[in-house]
Image (cartoon, rainbow, N blue to C red):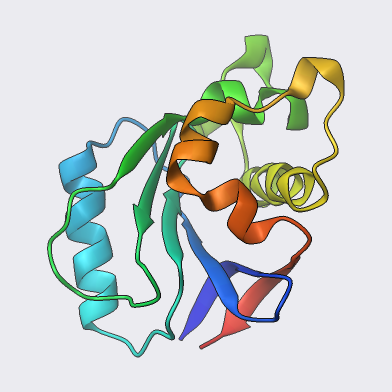
Length: 152
């Protein structure tokens, strides 16, 4: 089993596991069921956060160090279009699945995460800090490192 993107904190512990789905228009209920099914069918290491990233929405769970296959609503639902817009060139700023390849989507999410890791944003790329601060994600991953396709 592999995770699409894994962020380690400054101490080398897994802070965030991110699964990418190049699908749009899904609900928080769909994301919660997908997360539950995925976690129920695999061995996942402890992580502070778990995120399902879609071109139009991010669903984030605060796992508090454990990944449990319970049916839990995401703690945060984020508009991904605005977050990813600076990292991808798409027709009229749209990130619809037919307009973006899975590879471009993965690179856009990775670039966004790297900017959080390094806290390096240009003035027009400032993140929506309310949910990042409220969730604790920004502080948890700052100064960490990102890996692709990590075997778990």
